[in-house]
Amino acid sequence: MDETGLYWRWAISRGLSTASIPGAKKDKARISLALCSNADGSDKVPPWLIGKSKVPRCFRGVNVSAFGVEWRNSTKAWMNADIMAEWLKAFYKHIGEDVEVILLMDNFSAHLAGMELAPPPPNVRIEFLPKNSTSQYQPLDQGIIANYKHYYKRQWLRFCINTYAQKQDPIKTVTLVDALRWTQIAWRDCVTPQTIRHCWVKSTILKKVDNADEDPQPPADLLDLLREAQVVAEVSEDARDLRTFMAPEDEDEEPEQAEPDLQAIINH
Image 1 (tube, rainbow, N blue to C red):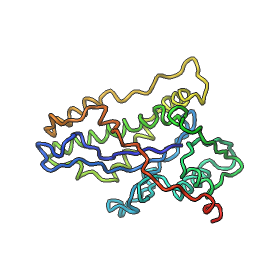
Image 2 (spheres, helix red, strand yellow):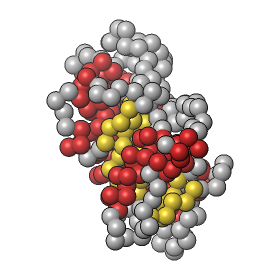
Image 3 (cartoon, helix red, strand yellow):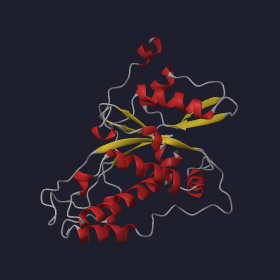
């Protein structure tokens, strides 16, 4: 299990506006996701999305759980101890009592505090990855999260193309309901078991096998979609390149949070 940040309506342009859509401002609206999968990709836990608003306006009258995801909120739109405790309880229920599992996480303070609030049942063992080594040993960081984002932003680009073609601003038109739907499609349908298995092997947690899969590749049409969106939007000099569009420099940075008082949590 691991978290990632997502600029869910990241603009195709670096500038403050486009020629066809005056006033379309650069946007850094961010949500966070908690993703979790077993080693062979046969069990992808429903994603949890975390934003700042408890009930965004676009959610009114919408059954979020019907999208196959969960929505939570926090001040910084990031994982905290209370949400982590909720996630763990949901994970224990998801696993059931008849299967023994090891849950791997980094030692982020919210993970530690959440486990104190929701200790594991006898059949679940939680192991924390070594400090300062998450990028090496965390399977999700070996390409699973990146693969999810490739397929999420592929859908976002298609939305942009259709919206710009109608002389509308996609940043003003898209809603978090779209983000829920695109997340479910990307995670459930597009991130393959082969990709997941390969990233577990690449992390060295699993032994390498002779027929190990190659590194997951982004969809072949991503660059074409980005260019098409920029043409339709009449973006030229300030157009983002594919690398910057797919992986914004600060998208995945954890916001600064006060360290939790673990003893107070234990006493509580």
